[in-house]
Length: 509
Image (cartoon, rainbow, N blue to C red):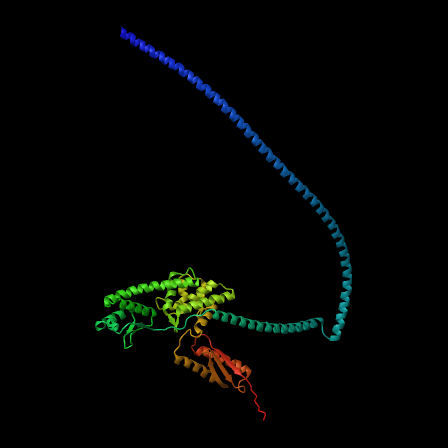
């Protein structure tokens, strides 16, 4: 029983504790609800105040916008009112001027009527005068008009021809003077090196003992070197020198560099020769490409195709009449740029055409085409502009010139090739050409003497004044120049100067 009562008491105590906790929780809940209601009222009041403030702010902004709009409308109305007033004034002025015009028109009409009456009288008088003049002169008015017109035409034609001749002569003088000025200035501003060797290179050695090592046992080394390079190697009694002979300058350069490396290394045998020659060819091809790139950079030429750049580099090892082709092309490019600048043309296009004008001389293959036409086809193949391609193809008159760049390239090519020291000739052929020039002129009747001067670029012909008249002198000079052009080969141009004079000499004793 005691245990039961103890359990019941514990349960009752727990129930009482639970009830007390419930009552306290309810009070706390009621307090939280009251606090939340107070806080909500506070928030509500704040939001209402904020809403009122925003409403007032928006109202002020709206009123401000309305005032601005009313102000703008007022200014617009003022402008419209001013325009209406000015238009009203203009309309009044127009009406007033219209009335004045009407009055002037009426007065003009009255004057026209009076003029018609006077004109009728004048026509009658004119007809009487014409009839009297016809009787006196025996010519009708139409015949007199036609005669007067023909006389005026003849006078005008004569005067016009005189003016045309004066203008033509003046234009020729000015054109020749300006052309000489431009050419002289261009030549003075460009200078390059003299002629170089053509088909032989000399390889210097320290002693003649090296010759035996180069020849090898039973000549196997020199035969291997000649087969690998395609160059004839001449080992003779010339002290401390070996001659490399070949018309292809690139092969000669490969042979020279390979020999230099073999002699420096000391190992000379056929297998080593083939290895060194192959390596030298690769290095020389890289050097050719680098030379082409450096040349384009020096001249300020950009966007050139890689194959054309390589061809420009190959020009370094090619010569024309003893003149290095790369130096010649660089000189022509600079001359073209200067001349194009003087004439107000595109300097970059002229310089590009000048550099590429001889690329037909350095192709990988040798087709049966003139180098100018081949160069034009290569330029077209690698995407050059039509003006550049035409200038390349036309610089020897093998295609028609289609732009002003073409004659500039032709002239600059002649300047570079014909200047003193640019190209080398054999003395015998040079003297023969001078003698041929003189003998050609002496073959004409009436020619007393002839002199080839200025390295064969001018021929002065002295004629007998009794046999050759002034008119015949002009014809003879032209005939000699045409025969030189068709029968002889020469660099640049030959000037033919024919001199005819009459001298009267007497002595006082």
